[in-house]
Length: 134
Image (cartoon, helix red, strand yellow):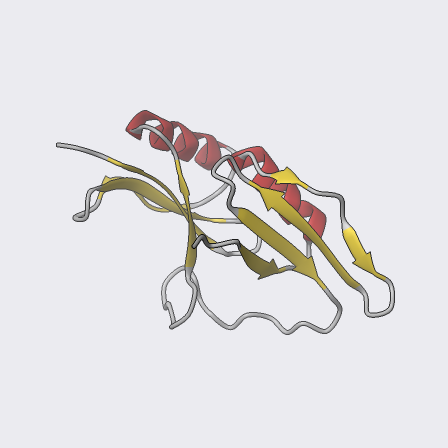
């Protein structure tokens, strides 16, 4: 069995789509629009085959989870894997230079990963990670 996709509600569908295309290589499908209820979405497919659905609809309330400091139960981050520690470093530098806050890292974790943490344009927590061997 595979994880088919994860979905994110957004108020800025095009901005979020462009972010995941630029920084993580997502390939979007054509935009789906349901005229009767105002729902719009894109599916982005990544190199691994995993997909991310970005969705927008009037009336969806804001998420009250503070993804920067006080985390709460439920899905809290998306992790994007790269092949090398150098690629983790390069992505961290790129994102920092383009104005994205690096929350932690790059760093080695106790469970064998090298990663950094950041936020997408809507404050969703992201990790960029790779396995390492000492």
